Amino acid sequence: MPIRRVYDPGEFADELAGNRAAGFNSYLPVRAKMHVTVPRPGMKIPVAGLDVNIVSSAGELTTNPVPGVRPAANPICANAKEREQDNTPNNYESIGMTIDFGKFRYLDLTDLTWNQEMQLVCPRNLLGTFQLYRTTRHGTDWAGSEALVHTVRPRVAVMNNNPTKGGTPGTFQIVKSSPGLEDFWQLHYSEFVAKDVQSPDNFIANFTKEDGGNHIKVTARSDGSFTVKNGRNGFTKEYRATGNATPSTR
Image (cartoon, rainbow, N blue to C red):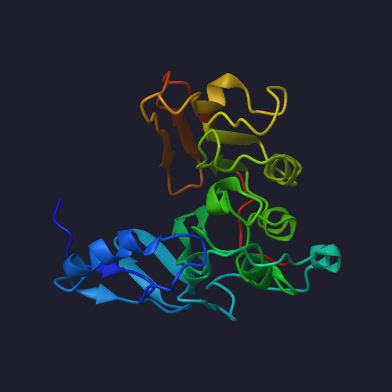
């Protein structure tokens, strides 16, 4: 598949934890030959049939609501608490976005930090609510704040963890207690919590690191309905269209 345009957050920020620059340095010769755009919050990325809005990039956050969202004071923020930033500053540069396909709404903040997430929903919810949320930073304790997750009220969450990265007890507690959540899908079984805390087996794509990288596939429709399929066993669940993912009044 030809790659004609690249969006990235710009220059690499030196990591404070080990040598993580090698991956970016190997990308630089390719980047030099590409058409590269460093998006800014508030920018739209043109994709036919989709409404893709950038809410974070290169350490900057949007201060305006996503188009169509009606922000109001968010009572969840009253008890929200910030956390100390960890030593991986490149996560702070993450490109986060909302993706709308008709009435279907998807939130992907990639590796944004806990405190940055809070700024997107506190004191006002600038994002709205969503059918689908991909857990930020693999479901680690450095992101996925209760203020964010409980404000955006996903019907379904998908966690892109592995057995020993993400899937922490705090993530399970926050996601599973989110108002309106119907299901929590896991890319991998987590070694950090007991079996009775995990999602049912049909909602877990891989049980060990040797499972072959089974996927979780989401098929969305413009009426807001969608299906989620487990690549390991073909288990599929249908989520009918509802009116719960809408521009926010919170």
